[in-house]
Length: 502
Image 1 (cartoon, rainbow, N blue to C red):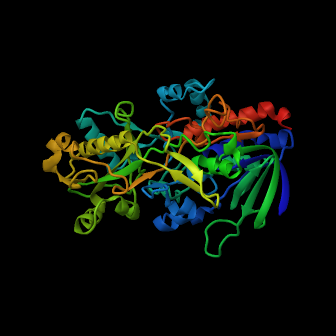
Image 2: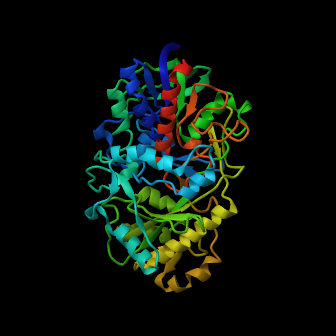
Image 3: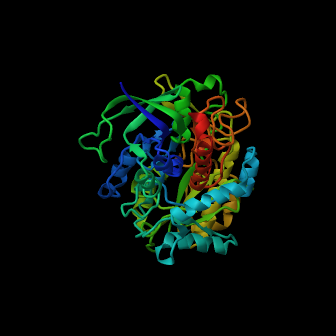
């Protein structure tokens, strides 16, 4: 086993790890510190982002985008690459509602601080409202349908620069327009002297060391080879920052035996379960040209706990999202150039069943059940989406929670009555989640949390968490900016306490 020594080791390179790496990187020059970021996934060259749906899913998603919950009823989508999930999401950049942070009730953490810290990353990552030419028919129809219903659709701020409207955001952006940590924070950190090691999976934490395994690049695989030789490595460090995400950070601590002193480890997992709805219009619309996710509707988030977002997914994901088989299923896919799409997200809250564990080999296992509230939120969101579709002029709607999933314009007037017969049944409707949160929640003590309000793991000086696993409950929106704001807070804490950590 190779042995190496660094001052600070950061595990993961996504929104949390990238932000921490950038904020601490000046210590490399100012104080001569050695800092390493260990990333499980590969670093792809620009020309390797081809936009091919299946090809890119295999290259930059965990399990090719097919990581399943323990019961197989929900797909969890998260990145495994240089830049983490910032490589594979659409760039939407929202601040959390004040009521969410108030409900978290984390000592010393206020909404004002989250907002203030996030401003730095809003500027760095060029977060802005999308220009009109990049707003396609799919998004305009959503706005039009909401307006006719008296609902107000809001525009997403997005972190793009030079967007060419390829609509391939979820597949890694072939035009290098999306400003994730792979484009902004990690390159800045490396320029200051931080070392980023890819294809490096951390197996366990042992005191002030981590044990990691570097794998070779396969002959036909995408991405650059690792800068370290393949094999096992022990890396000693004075400070360790877990930024491996809401699945891998809890799993790593569980593999390392931390659950004995931290009974809440792995608990509090939330995910915003979501599914795609489609509707056919009588004419072709621009749907897969332009930015796919430009508007959302959140006025029902507090009352009915759902959010609607515009979206556009390519044929494979669309096909698996449609209920049923045979001619009816096929007819919607053949109508692809005329399809409008809406993503329904449930604002789930913590449930004692929903948690991250590990199997006998130490691999992460996510236990998740849809509570009655989540099921009702998905149904309510689906019916609201159908209303938007028909108000926007759709000729037929695919509503997988309805007794008969295909509705025509003649059904528009009876949607409220139909809602009583709609049912969400896990395993029968294709559900996915990409806003993975919790598992190492912040709190007051080891009895109610895994870390304190500054991301310090209770009882383990020098061990920190800086990713979405810190969230004590659902953030109810895309977590990207909230993660970066909390990571900035963790980095500041490490700076302030550095002398004591040595």
